[in-house]
Image: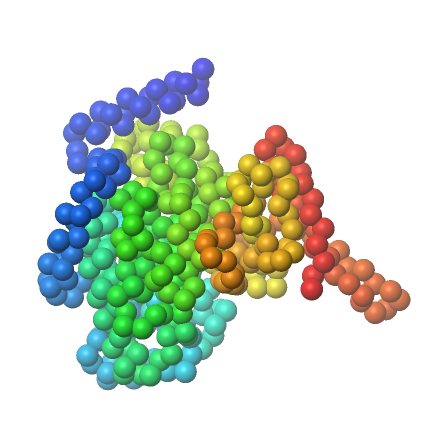
Length: 392
């Protein structure tokens, strides 16, 4: 009975607030049903491109991952030297998503630090498009193409100025930032090496043609983590459809362990529509933390398994690594040779390290002979599925 009362209260509060303000829920609803205007939307993209600079490029320092100490300015090659850009190392472009606060979220310095921890000589450049990202969602979503094109011009300039090989360039985009990365890749003169989409935003992009969202054509390798594709609040915050070469759905891409649904609903009931951002953040942002986890736990990476559906995976029929049927989750994900997207599934714990496993070592005398990993997956109905795999 209490659960029913909570849902009813949530419904009443949401509908009352929706009548008073133009806010997140209204934007998402308008966006979700506005796809019939697609041909008209494209007419305005070029106009947005001519409105001057909308993005800034901050080369972060591993000692100060949360500070914008140095900006690389396109057309000013002296800023490359001033920021100590390393022309021979990997380069990461980290692209944030939509924001209500107009500020970087707390995950940003954590991701920057993790990238430097894994690739110590790399260049980690944070793309700042906060001036547009802090608009109402529908407006921010509409601006992603203009931001992507500006990043593409930055990539072209960097390639020409530094002779940077684009196979060493990795774009990492979260939420709306994933589609920004896609537009950047599709409009760059030459194809970039890799794009990672961290729970790409669904509203206004789900079901769209490939040229209007992140797609496999945008880079030599596109991998995607889906963590909030089927929301319990009636909204699909992330994309459900596969849009990369490899699409991984942790816990089916819906509810994530450790994200308290009851607590989220109580926040919305108490604080109204503006609490939705905090309520959905846990599951949506889990994609970022899974990627950070993959950077920091290189020796024991989580595995995902190719399967026809999450239901089949829950029944335990897909836990095989034969013929490329499994892959590493996150940074270590590798491209598979398939004509269409490889959809993969995995189970995670509620906190980092997200992979639940035990290591079993077999020895003969004093010489180690083999090493096995015991993966335990908690499936629906509180059944535990054990997968014993040999480390090769």
